[in-house]
Length: 135
Length: 134
Figure 1 (tube, rainbow over the protein chains, first blue to last red):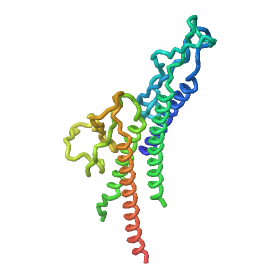
Figure 2: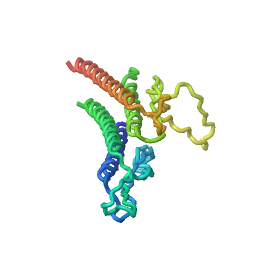
Figure 3: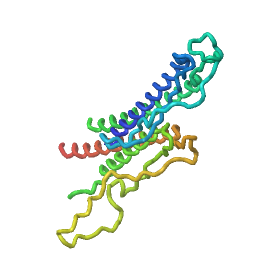
Figure 4: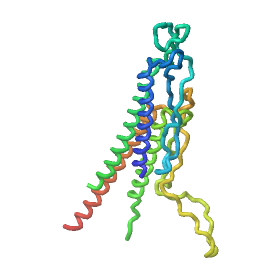
């Protein structure tokens, strides 16, 4: 039935957005994760990309995770000679995570999640009203 | 005597169209952050579409029993059209969430109207049957 597939599609959208939220939380949590060895590379910002694909089990086009990637922008270098991860010149590489960007991304994920939830509730109300015809 | 009551058929066709539209709009909302995704919408259904009939098309005639029978007309297959505006985000996504929400709300209201009409019509028939009993 179409209304049930509408609910499945909206649920897939919610799942995709929650994965995005998870990746964002990972980035935020690791905003200060430096390398464990002197001069090593710190945590690299992760990205996630979506795609609309046909699901073999249901025959519906659902939104899925296309791929996980990493942000290749340069790391921030700070002069901290006392730091255990400092290189020979006394510089420490910090992750290329911008907390402001992550917060904006998080808010966007939340908005999209709410939109999907709204779609699901509407489909549910329509199914309920059709069933009410029996009464 | 069988009166040709098309109203029920018409209303079920209408709710099929509305349900399918809701699924298409749900897909647009789910893909609101998918790069390169263009939103779709159902083509407005005409009277013949809702009744699941082709309006005056040509059909091959079977002149021999070994011919393959023509495929039965497809029910519930409405055409989808591209509904993206000219405006798209840098990732190529053209879904505008407010527009999709508005369309979903309109679909829901239409569905409400259809079910109310159905209920009213049923009440009409019940009244007629009740008059028969007394």
